[in-house]
Image (cartoon, rainbow, N blue to C red; front, side):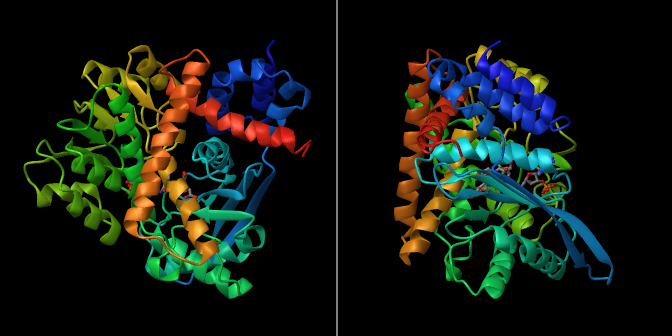
Length: 443
Ligand code: NDP
Ligand code: 2IT
């Protein structure tokens, strides 16, 4: 049995029930197999066994009092997965589905994604099974303060720097930052995605969606194509989805859909993005309201966004939102390119369908790395106590996405799987971390 298969079997036995983590690890380990086989020193150093075991996993109680005076208790997480190339870096997710498996899959993927950005950031992730939906601002504030009252002792500008993810945006980051500062007395870049008046970076809000489109644009360009005149289906209606929609539209595409956890909209004429932005971010409303605004559009309850015919699909909601049947439908409808804005949105079977049918497929670790890359730019600005202009940060983001595309494309070619960017991104991300871990000894 190969070294990779051995490690994978051990991991599956040791992490039973952690299906998302096992899925993410299976994808990475199987695709890096050729470069692991070419470096026998990795096995001697138990490199993969160390890579799949988080350096530290923190789980904690988050008690808070709701507006009715009832005591609520949630579970908080921070998984500090790998610090070989920099301080742990990765978002916090607040969603009722959050559990250790989900945080571990996200933290594990973050290691390779962060490596791909070429910036000095390790991998981590955290969150809580708290549901911000329907909560008042005061409830969200009290929750964030309680969450940070435990988390603060584990993080720091040079050790671990959290940010946003599902359910954590500017409002939540700001509440957590205020509490961190109050407890520690430190005015430091301990979180990214901060407001512009207290150390935030321009472009961070837009970065993941913009970066996704920059990377897909590069992938299309290499194939002699572009966004111009294309029909784009986007899932999700949050931070990543909305800014991806703006950028794709700027590049000449027509975005015809958004989805949320209750349903999806299909607007053949092109969605009214500012309306959705205001509806979701300010009013915290549901997409079902879109029909009142634009009666000619369709709203459907449930999943089904992938049935809409398109040239380019950008899944930007959550993990495993696009399965094998969805992938087959997209291919049958003529979809030519897929860019993953969400983390692990396509199942392993769906990826297989895309690769076998020659669909240009940009995997999450590369495609959505623009968010964390811009977070790292925010860290640099905080350390230097200065701030760059919108255009400066946007140009750096664009340059990073172009180099991510080039690195994953050339790694795929070098290891004999040209055009397989899943393997290319995993190999390119892995090699830098592996080299750093090998150099640093058995730690
Ligand atoms: P937001 O919370 O802003 O938006 C999430 C969107 O996805 C919402 O429209 C939400 O619907 C929908 N959604 C969430 N969970 C589910 C679910 N279980 N089923 C169906 N729909 C769901 O999050 P982001 O836009 O920040 O994150 C979206 C994805 O992008 C995630 O996978 C995240 O990990 C990834 N990502 C985010 C980055 C960032 O910088 N923010 C960076 C890189 C990746 P509803 O409104 O009903 O909740
Ligand atoms: O999945 C991700 O890369 C994020 N949620 C962003 C992490 C960050 O630190 O900006």
